[in-house]
Length: 305
Image (cartoon, rainbow, N blue to C red; front, side):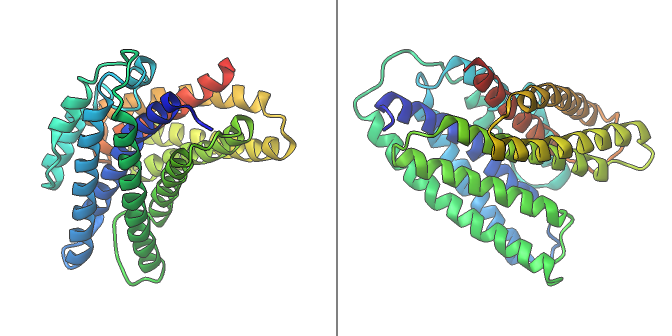
């Protein structure tokens, strides 16, 4: 059973990363629908607002509670997040409340003491998160089914919709486990995480490849190489998980994630500086960068033992 300290800190750190990811998923879905599908746009807007409100509440509770290492890991915000939000809001006409990002940069790290009422507040936040993730899972599933049945058009790839659906399910699974104070089998859970995130990294590379202008031949080539590399690592991680011998794969994953993290950082900066021809929203670049930072921290924690 998780200790009170572990329950509080792990829950809040999970929300700070994933709730932002979810609100941005809703934003990307909104931006991808055509005007005639106003019901889908409105539902995505509702979910975006719900996760924004939830994340704002999480930030307040997290102040002085979460670890400094987590805050410095680049998975909450990066040096590009604020500008990426402003630019992507300008491009789409969809409002993005940048005060949330500013508040996240002001979160103080763990001060070594928790208020007695904090455990209850975190428990209630987890309940909200389970409901909200259920809502966005249902919406993403509906959108994906409509797209696959050729009843709905969106500029988002069907694979991207499936990709963000898997991430929402992962978030919900984590919170349900935390809410039950379940002690995770670290080794088995990590093997599953390695396979999951290697696949996510592969798909990020493929999305970037497909959204770059055809004239960006070198960037397309680099993205394609990362896609192929992470496809291989995904297969190797699955094999290692089945055989429970992951060490070599984990080291390869670590080096590959460092590489794609740097590529995403350079790409996001290039998008913001208008130096890359593409149809990539800068916030999508920053979004994928934060996910790479998240996975990198998981690998580093596991390597430390």
